[in-house]
Image (cartoon, rainbow, N blue to C red; front, top):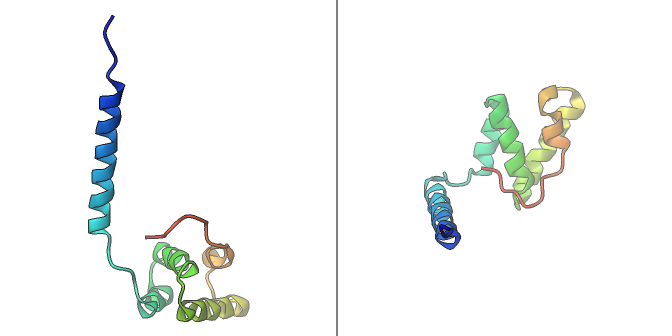
Length: 99
């Protein structure tokens, strides 16, 4: 009966996962500034605006909160795209860091 080499496979999978994690960390762009996020929210594509809301929701800066408050004011005035309402109003997902 042939023997199964699971420990070797587990080590290989672990090393591959680690290599992918290191590679993605090396190629990830630097975090955006609040001013850059404001530009994205003002004139970016819909998907870029959605990602900006996700990043701002977990940003620990008061300026990020002020920018979100300004977007909420646009929502109250009816000037925020309906496609972005949930992105503005939904609480951030726990344990995630948007890219």
